[in-house]
Length: 441
Image (tube, rainbow, N blue to C red; front, top):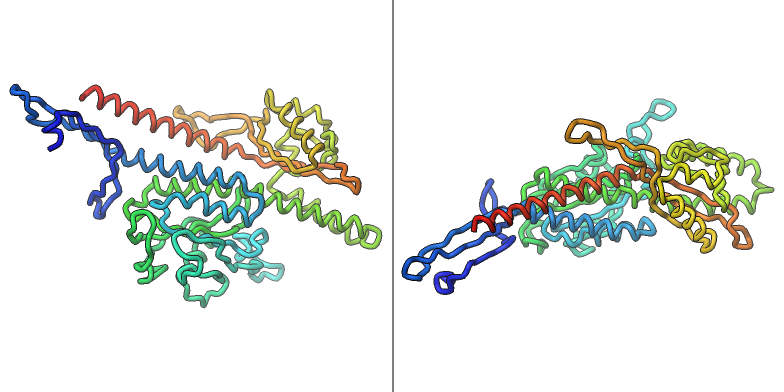
């Protein structure tokens, strides 16, 4: 009616509509343009309408924003406790796609292996994991003291009737995302919740295990309610997969490593004080550390302050291409152009500030991508690593050795580049659609 009076073109972009299709009210977005048709007498006699559905583009942009926000939050994590808090801060903005979230950690999680419950002991008996007690670290969409968010869950107690414990136990056994009807978890109590987002009760809950990269350890679970107005399709699964990737690569591994290294440094200092009295125990401890270093899923090495490699585990030598006794200047041969100066600057700052330093750099060592290109050929790039250096100081606060820890993050960088490429593709398609609309209007 307004266009009939003003004879002006009406344009709307990314307009939200709830449409009943596929058997439920679906969250959709449309862009349209209504161009008035003027009759011979100068009056508006009709409109030429162009309507384009942009649901996938709008929701993908929204979810990618959540992934980026989570990545930003995780980059500042200093401890495991801080990490749990930042995970919730990162996903809190997703009120529509994550109307409710519960975050549980496993007590003594670093020592809990997802395979330990089924591996046989020395006498052929089945060994039980040290702990499968879950502690609530935070909640989104409910008060902390809400009865639907139990403070603790014991997954070892098979007599526990809690449906939530059963869902987490199933996710633990399969080490995979588990989808469960919400009424199976919360019962009729879910209808009393003031739901975020669309304000409507979701129909499904997912339990996502949190597993660090290249590890068998499950550290916790994310329990998420799903958007009641979107199908749980491949796009939704991909969104949750990206969230899980942000949690597990490489920030979580770096935080775990940092805490583990600091703990070992404290142990080493205490052993040095009692060296004369506990020489036999110290020797045994050194053997255990050597076995740990040889089996660790990260590269570990002890360096002098000027970069000479005193000792290193096999993975460190494999990733760097250097060997024990390698001087600092050999880094220039294994790093890509321009990266050697970055490492030199980081080592100088570590010696001066006597604080741990973590940087990302690239090695000349080729890395093969997990996917083939469009022609079915293998794709290669440089190896990207996360280099963490931790100084050891003597009684005069002078650095006498440096622990070097290396994590291969090539797959993460590849995934980030692929995600960026897909985003650029979606933006280009959107621009082409807009140009087509302009041409036809």
